[in-house]
Image (cartoon, rainbow, N blue to C red; front, side):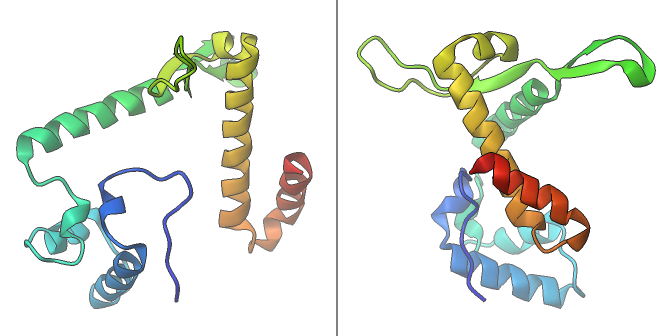
Length: 161
């Protein structure tokens, strides 16, 4: 079996060869009876020199800070605006990620902005649209083998074309 990283993935795991990671995770999965837990993976990686050791931040203060940043990202992705009540309620995402351009044309770090504002700026609207299409394509790849979703998978292909 051949392994690779998911397109667009970021993080410490990139310090590990994806083939090494995939093969090692498969060994762990088989050793644990067919299923993996995050706890099992972290416990296995804790030893210096372990196959997945460099995929994790082991300095507790830095790890705590990085975890809080991830919690903030989760918070920003999770806040929804709700208009109306019950089944008729309109639920919309509030924030989206964008990459703005600096005064000299340089790409600035990714930030969160109000989705409604991003949609009103042509450059940012294009980024939101590209992100949405990438999510659809990811869904398409992940579930392409499910016959029950054949119509949805086909429709995604038509939209993305």
